[in-house]
Length: 101
Image (tube, rainbow, N blue to C red; front, side, top):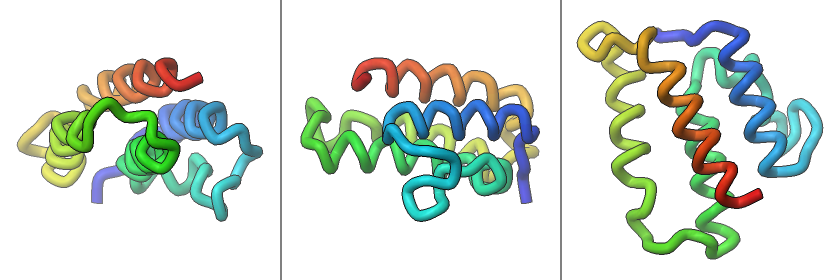
């Protein structure tokens, strides 16, 4: 199972918490670095779900490519050099979140 560095998971937690305006382990305990360390895609799923639930997306497929790209990278880490893609994922997710703050 692919795991990201805990420091990167803390960054994801911070970004998700900013969007949801919640404390650590908010959103029923899911906004938590311990969760994101082993399940980094949970952060993106939470963000895209928030955007969709609020009706803020410009289309139903607005984030499909982003989700598919990183889901593949994290599910097949050896074939996709996942360790070198983590920062790109964080940067892209932060850019998405910035649009909605």
